[in-house]
Length: 541
Image (cartoon, rainbow, N blue to C red; front, side, top):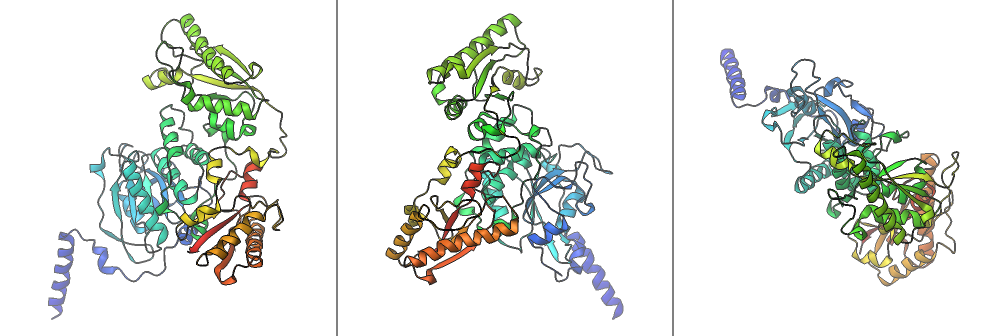
């Protein structure tokens, strides 16, 4: 009988092996603990969006060896990085490949539910995996897929995968990777942060730049920046309130601004953050070969942004600089570049900009911004730049003193709301009370910020089915714990006012979110003014 049992076990194991099943599956037990977002945040010591769990050489966390430049996107939900092939200590292969075998196995054992390779190249060399014994002693099945990060349909599919992981602790994290953990993974990460954390267009592109570790100087990367800015979050894949606050990591407190790509759009929105002598390239201003005019300058985004910037800040003085590549004779190049610069200068004068705000100069090919060895580099060197020659001196020991009315796109359109929009909201969606504005450290409802609250009370008295939650917010100033208390007090002040105006208490709830989910940058006063706000979440209607 004993011999029969042994033969049965041996035969069973052989069948498992022949069927490509992992023999580990026979020792799977019940999971000892849940793999929550807090578990991963603590396990990987995640601090901010730039913190590397695994470094450029694949070191830093042995149980994740095979990955490279691994960073969190959403705590315990989504991670970005590369595949450690070139720097692998043993089985080295070319950098342009999917994950090595130990990389995919280690991710599985760490409890990841999905890994995504963002390029097509060499996908046929991707390792295979069935199941594995997870770090919590349970059984894990990890899927490994290939998606193209430049395909909008694939982007949507990846967001759906991340959304499922965010909504359920029973679905493990997702690892989205390219080769180095810089460009493609940075793109999909920036999109994820816009979709699930409400990151702004410019903050998302700044995040992409920082995540490239300095490999962001090629002109071709402007296409990625544009795609990030142009991405519009899907309304059916939104995260709200406590979950969003829990999984969205902050940006680092210290940022190397030399690594950031500064555009004309920054000159419109945050001119005070751009020092004198900064050079900004007009990437949208592209002249044809030997041409000195543009076909439709009124629709050129960069030119319109210069007009906006100088209209709002007449203290700024710009030099319009024309540049060429190194093709042709230098004297011809210099004349051509000067004529292009003068065309832009004349256009701006024609739009009402004072000549005292502008000067122009042709540099020919003497100051290339990119390499002249490639076609893309030469094309990008045929460019117009603006240099900030002068602007109002601003104090270096405090943030800029700017009025809230200085906000411009992309924030203006996002913050224009009406109480009528409440009827178009779905259950769980929020509406900003954009006229309820609090001074720093204050939470009192005054005559100046009560009008919109009183109007909301009238709507709720007329539509008795509506139930809402009042959400209070602060800016990033101060201690987080105190910000949370302050935000609760602001929400309660609105709650109390609604009850005072006749709304039944059983139709109202209130809570505070502290400084989470900013709607504008906290770097400047106008952004902080906007972030001290009240939102209402529709619970029933």
